[in-house]
Amino acid sequence: MSCKSLLREVSNYLDSDIEPAVRQELEEHIARCPDCWVILDTTRKTVEIYQCCEPYPVSERLHARLCAALRKSCEEAEKKQS
Image (tube, rainbow, N blue to C red; front, side, top):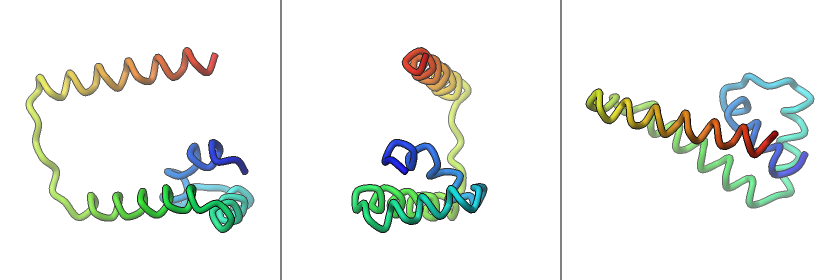
């Protein structure tokens, strides 16, 4: 597994929504790649922290701006992959 592949699977791994073979590859990779281990560990800790927090309400205007920015980012990422 490459570092790039690991990054695509981090969310699935943390959610335990990953095929056993892919899980094993990912765990083997992080055992030998300190950079990916840090990414996985930091992501796990961040999720744990935010799961304990109450949601912070945002204005409709800010919500709309965030959604537009996410859409734009996703569209740009899709264009780069094509």
